[in-house]
Length: 148
Image (cartoon, rainbow, N blue to C red; front, side, top):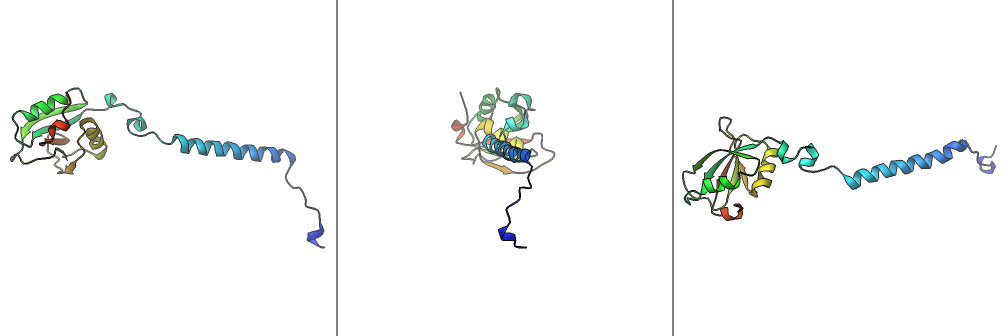
């Protein structure tokens, strides 16, 4: 028996010839939609807006020695979802740049705080007994972050 001389046999039923391309097309549309729309980012990914999330507790410290700077900066946070638990001064007024110190907060709350304040610089000095999740040390560049 010579296999090269035989007629090809059609083993796929007629109705499957229609449904296979339709199924592949639907699958391609679904895959394209997932890649096009993607996963929502930020608070849309969690399903909550900033007004539905708990307030972030912070201590505001004057790091550059300008009189009443911590209280002025805290006043600009009043309309944000930030709870200022105390004000103070750093031991030495040496901060040129404002910075967020992570005391016991997590990275997700840090990102929220950075977005609300505009301060991107941060460091970690974890202390489970600290009275707030974060400390904001206001530096000489404070005018960049104080909104009128």
